[in-house]
Every structure is written in C-alpha cells, then in structure tokens.
Image 1 (tube, one colour):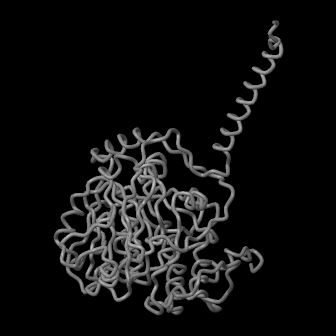
Image 2: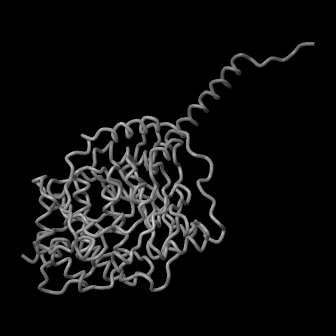
Image 3: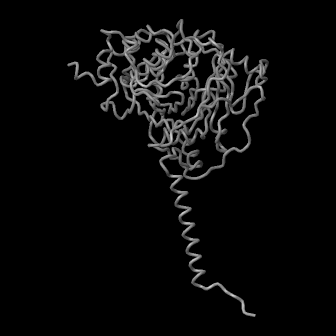
Length: 452
C-alpha cells in the first residue's frame, strides 16, 4: 500500500503563507494600537486591581447618564511608561524636597471671609511674586470647618492625593478604575461633602453619622460644615479644588477631579505622563469649543451658568482694563485661554501653588466660574508657570463624564439648571458699546484693522 505525502514544495508554500499571514496580522494589530485614533498608549501591561472597590446599594445608582464622546481622532496621544518605573520615580520625587522648592509663604490672619475678599488693586499687586519673601493671600483666614480626625488624615498624606467634592448633593460618588496593585498604598483619595450631601449618603446607608471617620470604597469622606464658609455651594467647592496644596500640606502632587467624572486611568500614570514627563507645574485639558475668555463669558451669560450678568460684565471689564487680551500666537506656548478645569493635575511647587492661590482670590472676588479668571491670572503672574494643556480627546479617554443626576430643582445659587448646550459663536450680548473690552472684542473677531 502506497501512502500519499504532501510535496515538499507545497508544504513550503503553505509555511510561507502562514508566516505572511502572521506578519500581516501583527502589523495590523500594531497599526491599530499606534493609530492616531487612540489617545492612550501603555508601553507595557501592569497588574491592575481586579476586585470591585465598592458595592453600592441598588437604590444609589452609581452609574447613570454617562455623556457619550464622539471624537474619533487624536492629534496628541499620551504615552505611559511602565507602571513599576512610574511608581518608583514618583516615590523618589516625593522624597526629594528640593524638587518642590522654593516654598510659597502665606498671609496668616483672621478675616470675615475665608479668603479675605481683597480689592482689585490689592489682588493685582500679588500677581508679581518676584520676591519670594512676600506673603500671598491664599484662603484660610477663617478656620476650615472639618473634624480633627479628617484634618490629621489629610496632613499625613505625603505623596499623591486625588481630591473631589460634592456640595448640595448634585453628584454620585464613583470609584476610580484601572488602579495598579500598589496605587492605594501610594495615593490618597479624599471626597469633600457638605451636610446636605452627607445626609444623602446617610439615607442610602453609605455612611454612619455616629462614626468619626467615613470611607466609601477608596474615598475617605470629609464632612465640611459649609454654613460657616460661603452661601454658594459652588464657591465652597472651589476651596478643595484650588487650595488642595494647603489642605494637604505634605502632599507633593495632586489630581482634582469633578464629582461628575469617573477616573479611568491610574493616577500615578497620569501624573507621570502629563506633569512629570512634561516638566509641568500643572496640566489640564483645553476647552472643547472656546479659545478666548470672552467667548466663555458670553456663553456663561447666555446659558445662565451664572445668574448675575452685571457682575460678569464688571469682571470682564476689570480684566480688560488691566490688560487682558484675546488669544493670539504671541501667547505661545499657551495654546488657548480657556481650559476645561474638571480635571486638574498639579505639582505642588511654587508655580502651581502661586497660580492656585491667585485663582482662588479672583473666584472669591467675582464668582466660582474659574474659566473666566484663568487667562488673566496665567498671563500676568510672575514667575510664569509651565502649563500642559492637553487635547480634549485625551480628557475623554482618561475619564468618563456623567450628568448631574442628583440635582435638586432650583437648589443651586445661580440657577444653573439649564441643560448644557453648544454655542457656535459668541455674540455682542454681554458687553455694551463704549465698554472697556471693545478693543478686546475687535481683536478677537479680527476687526481691529478694519475699524482702524
């Protein structure tokens, strides 16, 4: 009986075809992973925490109404280093005090308001901090009303801290995802809540009023007696957002994340890629629609994001009178005047801390809409800080945004119950003729040469 065998030549062709197919598959997979449609690259996998960080009762409804993203391209992708390398580098940095010097000095006295409510000229005088011996106003002119248990825990956080806040019961507490196996031993997570928000957590049996300390998953809950601070809940939220370096005096890096967001990437990787590797003092996303401060101001008035339009007008005219200009290439390396401040990454050094203090002073003086004061403080502060303003596509990859699904009708000062809308183009509906901002507006719309 003769057995049929496959010719050697045929077998060789089959082998070549297999190798060719494998090569094409690997090439396509590599191309897909390195395509410009991806904004996040990880150089190597790491060991993430697999078990759920917390199990919420069904009545709480942790995840509802996520806002979809529609961007399909990315012009500036983010590269992540190996998790183990990142962990060691950040730990080493946190032990090196010289990397965070010189240290900012703060005014310490008592005042009727938490921030002192300084006049315009007084606030402007602090923009130039060429003399490091000068003390700057930076809040805490009244005691921040939290428990001693929480204060002690905050002071013991000496590395990286992730901070968020829920005031007026507008949001849910969402657990971060993608945490590395050693992150919880290196990173602190703190959530500030007022009495109304705490009552909501108590209603869902997530906290106990009788306990001196509270924790929900990774988040340590800090109860703030906000009635002793500002009437506006949004202004109370500005305190942990911009004065995080004072609330956590021994921390070296921080991430502020609005409670409407869920963090999807390990905070150590984010700090390393967006701050440390860029040698930046601070990192945040560009605004998805606006480039100029006045565009944001007009949208704020039109969509009733702040109720006092006259105060908005006064704020913009104050900035125009003191030199605020629309964005032009002359402002490079700053690529826009309007950020999205829902996610802020900081190094707690002189530049970032000074900017945060100056921003807080402006917000107390006018309103908590921080995008309006951003360019004025950034452009006129001395010394300059290095700011990494990353693409919106990156922001949409590192967080998931949810709607304010706990909002109570009419509960927020300023009546910001209107649904978010997209503004195609700002109009002359905030500032009147003969305004101090006429030159700004003409420059912004490219009409300056025409009118001259």
